[in-house]
Length: 188
Image (tube, rainbow, N blue to C red; front, side, top):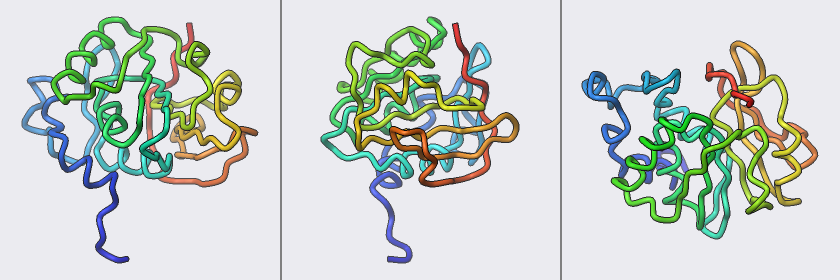
């Protein structure tokens, strides 16, 4: 129905983005823009977070793997929609700050693992959904392997700019979204 708000939009409206924004950018917390965070990490624009998570089609019984925790903003949104969220962050300093943010937003069903997200997290696979908050020219194979048969993965695909895509376990693009610019996926 036209004008009807999605569940993702309702969740985003309840989460105060200012919790995830560095002090010097607090005046921009409610703007539709990405903001610098720390160590080359960013706070993704709310509209892009909304688009990605809507493409992901998260259900309340899903286990979600998130690659690139960053500030924890999208992790917090996911935690309000899914049963469980496991988020991987490559930068230990960024991960520590994200954990503080997640505690403040009450994301008790989310945990942050420090590691190389391009390898996924086999220990808790398979996943219903995987969200990748960094760009790559291809979908990392370990992520597809850790996806359930009927699972879905959403990520910015390409070099510069990228296109948000939803892919199935076979790596086939089943839906395209916004053109975006994300930081590259770091690989250890």
